Image (cartoon, rainbow, N blue to C red; front, side, top):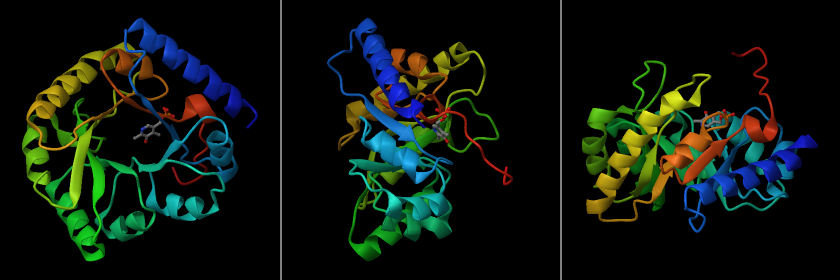
Length: 234
Ligand SMILES: *Cc1c(COP(=O)(O)O)cnc(C)c1O
């Protein structure tokens, strides 16, 4: 766990260098530390050492861990597949941003739950740009239509887009997909009535490519916390 602090420092320096290289050094990039499978102690270390946003991908795990986090943070992000029967639990954790809304049905259920509590929620639309069957996300061609429909729900603020690149050893293979999503992002942003400002793409192995292609929100797990041990349930 002593590596976490070093890893964060190195990652931040690397991100700054990459942004400079791209002429984007004045831009705000949100670094979201992905804490799934790691103990609360690891979350606390990250939060005490320059991380203020963190993410989980399972509601159950977040329900267990969040009450034990002892350091202040700006945002808890939810980045996993969301089952409708877990919506109320997730909302009880007051997520800063839900990255993984990918269907009208899910948006509608979320809207209803929010309506009952008189709250609003910032969300991203997850797009499956690489069209891999194993991944969640709306298809690229259906994304615009879905975004505009969801934008009509009064409790939901669509703040941008999220995608997962190809899980391939060579991150370059994801570049055309990231570029495609950035184009869609720019196109929707032009006409969007609210703040459409987050482009969440880039993980430990491909964040450089994602930044080069215009990402402004990185979701980084193993490059900060090391290898994930899923135990027996995977
Ligand atoms: C696990 C996960 C990440 C982080 O992955 P790393 O390769 O460990 O950086 C990012 N996004 C999503 C949606 C994830 O599930």
